[in-house]
Length: 634
Ligand SMILES: *[C@@H]1O[C@H](CO)[C@@H](O)[C@H](O)[C@H]1NC(C)=O
Ligand SMILES: *[C@@H]1O[C@H](CO)[C@@H](O)[C@H](O)[C@H]1NC(C)=O
Ligand SMILES: *[C@@H]1O[C@H](CO)[C@@H](O)[C@H](O)[C@H]1NC(C)=O
Ligand SMILES: *[C@@H]1O[C@H](CO)[C@@H](O)[C@H](O)[C@H]1NC(C)=O
Ligand SMILES: *[C@@H]1O[C@H](CO)[C@@H](O)[C@H](O)[C@H]1NC(C)=O
Ligand SMILES: *[C@@H]1O[C@H](CO)[C@@H](O)[C@H](O)[C@H]1NC(C)=O
Ligand SMILES: *[C@@H]1O[C@H](CO)[C@@H](O)[C@H](O)[C@H]1NC(C)=O
Ligand SMILES: *[C@@H]1O[C@H](CO)[C@@H](O)[C@H](O)[C@H]1NC(C)=O
Image 1 (cartoon, rainbow, N blue to C red):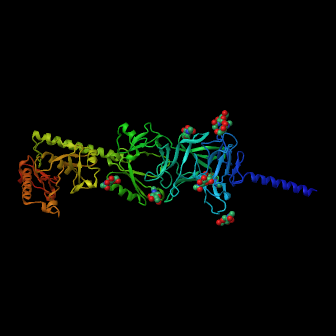
Image 2: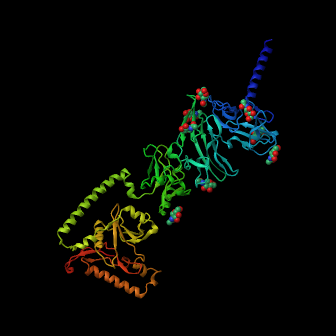
Image 3: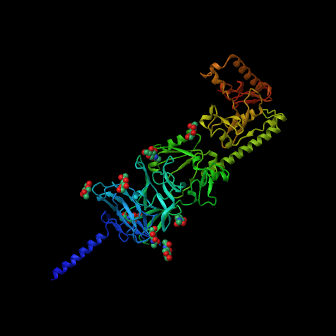
C-alpha cells in the first residue's frame, strides 16, 4: 500500500508545482483576463505586471514593477491619469486585439493604441526586459509587435528602453514625470531627444519650455551627463536614417540600474545594491544650476564650486548682468562636419575669423568630426571628472598668458626684459636731450616738435577688434617686415596695421627708428603714422591708403591702364617733393634707403605718399662727412 500512497503524494506535488507555474504565467490570452490579484511574471522572474499602488496611495494602477527586488519599484504605469479606486480592475485583450483596462462599470480606463487586429491569436507577454508586448501568436516572427510598453515610457527607463525618435513611424519616445512619488498622473516634465538643433541631444522640458539639455553625444557619452567610465551601465546613442535615440544597458546581468525623471524634472540614476537591499542614487542630472539652459549666458564658464558660479571665458569680459540673463542659445551657432580630424578642424576654424571655438564630435578613436562655434559661446561648463572631449577656444595670445602658468614664467621674463629695455631707452632719451650733439647722429628737435612726438599708443585689443583678429580677408599685403592689415577703429577711421613679424629683420632698433622718424615727419607726401602698439608684439598704425601701392599700378595687369600720364606726372612730382622734404626741408636729414614702387602708397586722390622707413637713416647737417658701412635696401 506504500507505493500508491507515494504516488498520490507525488501526484499532489506535481499538481502544486503545476499550480505554481499556472500562477506565474508570462502570457495573457484573450480567454484569461487579469484581475486585481493576478499578475503576469516574466519568464526569468525579473518583472511582474499587475495592479499596484505606489507608496501609500490607495489607488490601483496597472503597472510593471521589479519582481525579484524586495522594494517593488514601479517602472511603468498604464493608467496613470485614470486610477482604479477599488479592486475591480480587469485587464483583457479586447475584440479589436487591443489591451483594455476596465473597471467594475466596464468603463475603459486605458487601452493600448495599436491598430485593430483579430483578437483570437493576439497575446500579451511580459518579457524579461520589463517590456509588455502585444503580438500575433500565429506569426512566428520575434520583435514584430502590435504594441509594446517600451514605446510608451512612464517616468522610468530600464535597460533597453529608448528615448528619442522612430523616424519611420514618427514615434516620439519620451519620459514623462509623475505628479509625485505616489501619484503617477502626468507631471510637468518630459525628457526626450530634441532634433531641432544640428546635433540631437537629450532635453528636459517643462511643458514646451526647454529646461535642461544633455549636450551632444560625443561617441562615449552625452557630453553634459555623467559619468563616462563606470562599472554600472553602458550608455548608447544611435543616429541613423530610421532612428535617433538614447538608451543604455546594464553593465552585466547582476547589475540592475534604472533612471527616473522625478517630479521636479531631475533625471536620476539608481543602482540596486544587493548588500543593503536598497536603491542608491548614483548620479542625477541636471546636476546643479550649471546645467540649466542658458543660465550663465554666452562666453561664460559655469563652475558650481565657485562662489560666483558664472565666469567669463578666457579672453572675454563680462557684459551687463541684464544681458547675461536675456541672451539665449540661439544667438550662438555652430556647424559641424563628420569625419574631420582635429587638425583639419583647427584649420577650418582658423579660416573664418568669426570662428570662436572648435571640438571633435566623436571623442572615440583619437577623435573625429568637426564642430565649429561662431559668435558667442553659450553654456560652456567645466567638468572635472568626466571631461573627455576638449573644446579649443580661440583667444588672442595675450589673453592666454595671464591664465596659463607655463606662460606666466615667460611673461615674467618678458616683463623684466621689457623693463630693462625701457630703462635703456629712457636713459638714451635723457642723454639725447642733454647732449644734442651725439657723435654721428644729430637730433635737432625744436620745442614744438616734441609735442608732435606724442604718438598714440594703441592697446592690442583695439587693434584686434579693428582688424577682425587679423583676418586674412583684411590683409592688404606682405611688407618686408611682416603683413599689413586693413582695419577700422570704433570711430570709423580706417587704418593700416603693419604687424612686424617676430622673425623679421626689423629688430627693436629699426622699430624705434621708424617710429621716432615718422612721428617727427609731417608732409603731405609722406604716409602719416597714427600710432603704434608695443603690447605683445610690435605694430605700426598708419592712415589707410585706399589705392594701395604704386607697384600694383605699374606692374599689376589690371590697373595698369588706369594710370593716365597726368597722374603719373603728379605722382612723380609728389615723390620728388617728399624726398626733397626728407633730404632738405625737414629738420632731420633723412635718407630713406629703400625707396621703391611698393613703398609709395596712393591715397584716394592718387596723391603719392612715401612709406616704410624701417631702413631710413638720419644724418647730421653735413652730409659729405657721413659714411655708412652697412649695405641696405632692396
Ligand atoms: C506611508 O505611510 C507611512 C505611515 O503613515 C509613512 O511612515 C511612510 O513614510 C509613507 N510612505 C510614503 C512613501 O510616503
Ligand atoms: C470609484 O470611482 C467610481 C467612478 O468614478 C465612483 O462611482 C465610486 O464612487 C468610486 N468609489 C470610491 C470608493 O471612491
Ligand atoms: C476598430 O474596431 C472598432 C470597433 O470594432 C471600430 O469602431 C473601428 O472603426 C475599427 N478601426 C479600424 C481602423 O478598423
Ligand atoms: C518559431 O521559429 C523558430 C525558428 O525561426 C523555431 O525554432 C520555433 O520552433 C518556432 N516556434 C513556433 C511556435 O512555431
Ligand atoms: C558585474 O559587474 C560588477 C561590477 O560592476 C562585478 O563586481 C561583478 O562581479 C560582475 N558580475 C558578473 C556576473 O560578471
Ligand atoms: C544623424 O543621422 C542622419 C541620417 O543618417 C545624418 O544626416 C546626420 O548627419 C546624423 N547626425 C549626426 C550628428 O551624426
Ligand atoms: C527630484 O530629484 C532632485 C535631485 O535628487 C531632488 O532634489 C528633488 O527633491 C526631487 N524631487 C522630488 C519631488 O522628489
Ligand atoms: C564665417 O562663418 C560665418 C558663419 O558660418 C559666415 O556667416 C561667414 O560668412 C563666414 N565668413 C567667411 C569669411 O567665410
